[in-house]
Image (cartoon, rainbow, N blue to C red; front, side, top):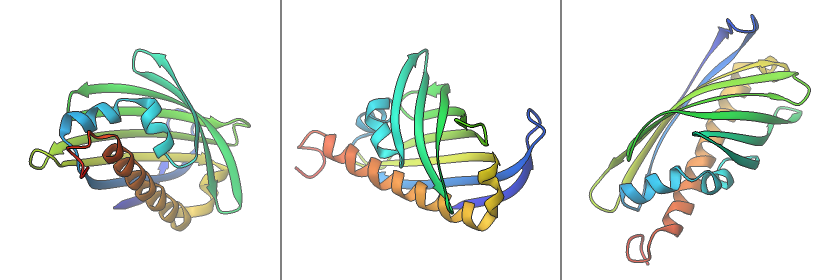
Length: 175
C-alpha cells in the first residue's frame, strides 16, 4: 500500500513529495529469530535495494550510503538513521535523514516496524514509512514516486524474507 501527497518541510521551507510506504509480509521463522535479524544492520543492509554501505555508530545510530534512481536521475544518498524507540521483540520506530552529496535532494523518513507471531514458526512483519523527498528528485511527481516506492518496498520485503528464512535454524524454516 502506498499513499502520496505534497507536503511542506518546516525545517527547510521547501516543498516536496511525500510518499507513504506500507507493506506486510510473512517470514517462516519464529518472532525472536526475525527480531534478531531485523536488529542486525549488517544483515538488513543487503536487503535494502541500492544499499552500498552501512556503519554502526553506536547508541542505535547508523550511517548508510544508498544508491537511488528515479526517472533518468541516478544518485547516491548519505543517510543518518536513528532507532528512536524499541520494544523488543516486536516494535521499532526509526527516523532517517539524508541528502545527496551535492545537496540537490533531501530525504526524511519516519518508519515503524511491527513483528507479530502467527503460530510458533511464522512471523508477520509490518512496516510503514512516511518519506518526504525535496529537491530535484521530488520534481518527478507523484506517479513516478508512487511506482518507485512500491517497487522498493516489495523488493526489500522479498529480500528480507528470503535472507531471514535462509538464516533460520534448519529445523525451523523448511530444512
